Image 1: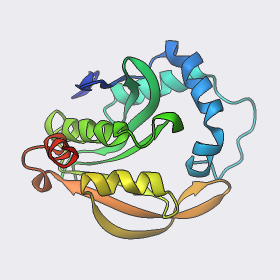
Image 2 (image 1 turned 90 degrees about the horizontal axis):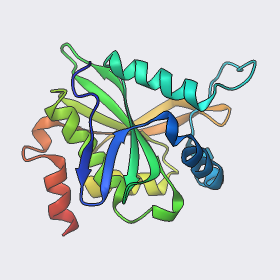
Image 3 (image 1 turned 90 degrees about the vertical axis):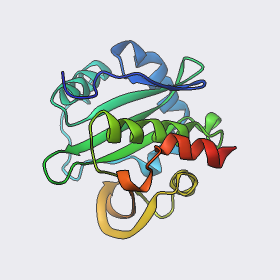
Length: 198
C-alpha cells in the first residue's frame, strides 16, 4: 500500500474515508440534486469523449488504483456517517517538490457549516504528516465564492492567478492558486482551524 492510504480521518462529526463502490446510489443522487451548484466548477475534458461514460464502479476502481500507486487519495466526506461530498488529494509528487493539490465538493445543503474547511484541514494535515509532503495547493475559479471562503477561513496563501489553468465547461478557465507549506502551520492546520473557528 502507498504511504498514508487507506486512511480514515475524523474530527467531531466530519469523517474522511476511502470512496467505495457501494457509495454509488448516494453519490449519484447528490451529484444530480446539486448539478446547478457543482457543474460550473467541474473539470471537463478538452478532448471529446466518445462512447459511454465510465460507470461509477470503474470510476472508483480507477481512483483506488491511483491511491495504491501513491498519486491520489480519493476521500468521501461524511457528515454524521452520511455521504455529503468528496475530497481528492491529487498530483501527489515526492522527491524535491513533495507537493499535492486538493479538490473538493459538498452538497449545497451542508455548505457554510464548516464541513469543507474541516475536511480540507484533515486532508492537509494528513499530507504533511503521513505523506511527509511540504506543500498543499488548492486552485479555485475567481468566481467561486464558496470555495474562496474555504481557503480564506483556513488561511491559505494567495499565490496569484493561473491563466487558462483548467478546462471547465468547454473552455480553459483562469484559477487563483492558494497554498500552504508545512512551515506555515507548525501545530497543524486542523488545530489552527479549531482556534479560528472558536
